Length: 74
Image 1 (tube, one colour):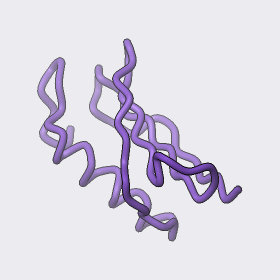
Image 2 (image 1 turned 135 degrees about the vertical axis):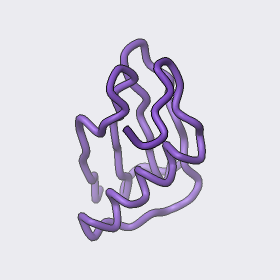
Image 3 (image 1 turned 90 degrees about the horizontal axis):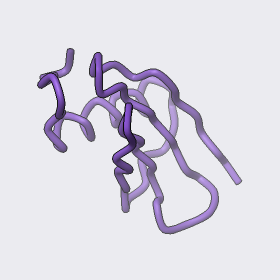
């Protein structure tokens, strides 16, 4: 999906998809953003160097789809 490439999504596409999800949920997109490379998924975390106001979006490496999302206000 989203420019999916069997084993790797382009970083910019991953960030774009994650940002769109934030906007659709009405959540803030706060820089810096970190990307964690897991075995089966990537995890995008906003406001990466702080505790609170973090959005966490998990994208499947297999399908390229968002499989989990959450907002941690505190």
